[in-house]
Length: 121
Ligand code: A3P
Image (cartoon, rainbow, N blue to C red):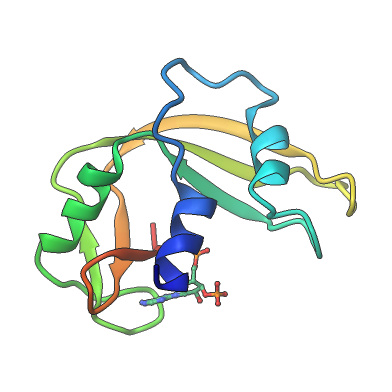
């Protein structure tokens, strides 16, 4: 498996969480998914939809990504997500996050194999 796709799944996919996350969700998940190792990753979103549905976003039309590349794609439907944002005053290695569930269309960047490698929005 190409490393960008593997990293995307590690950092952004949590398909099997069926209930609304509790307030500790991001504290646990950001650590478990290795985003607090060298530093606290400031912002990260987990997507609670099937990998099949998220991969299918790559078949939507290309749009411009925040970095100026044109390999981004927007989901047609709203997706269940959880936003994790580092709290003010949180210091590595004690990374503390605010957990915010949401439902919205997401934007992913896809590679040439048409698999997601980055969450743009
Ligand atoms: P690195 O992991 O090497 O820093 P994210 O965590 O935001 O999903 O990003 C995953 C990786 O995708 C990041 O690389 C990021 O720089 C990269 N990336 C950003 N925009 C991209 C794009 N349009 N196409 C492919 N990769 C992109």
